Length: 316
Image (tube, rainbow, N blue to C red; front, top):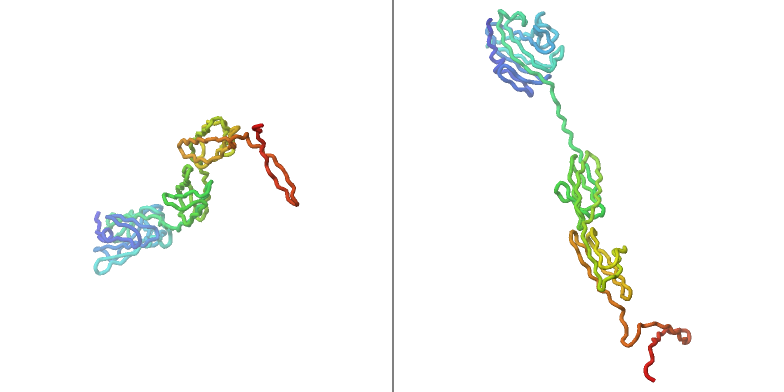
């Protein structure tokens, strides 16, 4: 069997749009135009045909897959005075469509199909054709967060970046997941993950838990009745745990003593002691406890209220 050399069919074969060639094979996409070329020294015409997926075994013409090579259907290309030929093959195949797959292009020096190549000179190249892909990049539509906290005025950090204090709206965010951290003095930090969807507003509300500490309440003398923030908590000395960090009001009452109200600050993760000194009412020396007696004296159109204090008589 004598093969003629189709040099450029291997070495100079290329595709105009987005394909790659290798020795004896190449890759391209359906719809691209592939430039085939080479040399023929034994004929003034080169006969091209194609075999591959879903095509007749003996081949078809490159320009029309319904023209069978075993019925004389070839794509004929003239050889120039320099023994060179070339052909631009449109892979959309006029007259029919190709499927994605690997095909063989045959170049023969006479009109012989695949089953009659015994006394001919020919060369081949393998061509893999794939479906073209189109990538459409759609710009991401930003979204927003509406952020709130209980209580308000919590600092907000999104993906490590400080954004402000609640209530807060953060706009212009790309779709995706974000880590949000809320923090406020005397409250535990609150972190959560929230997702931004294109063009949407995501609502996030954080309920912050206050940090706690302990409070020990003593009175001098002991035994006073204690109200803490208006709630009866018992008789001093009193210890209260898990109190919210911050300011609290203590009221202490004991019979015979002046009631006392004080403010105390509970510190997170610490124990604070408050000692309240109770005092008795003041009494004028030599007198019993003052007893106010109202006396009204009329004078013209006005009345004067005076107080007379009773005390024990002394002397004769």
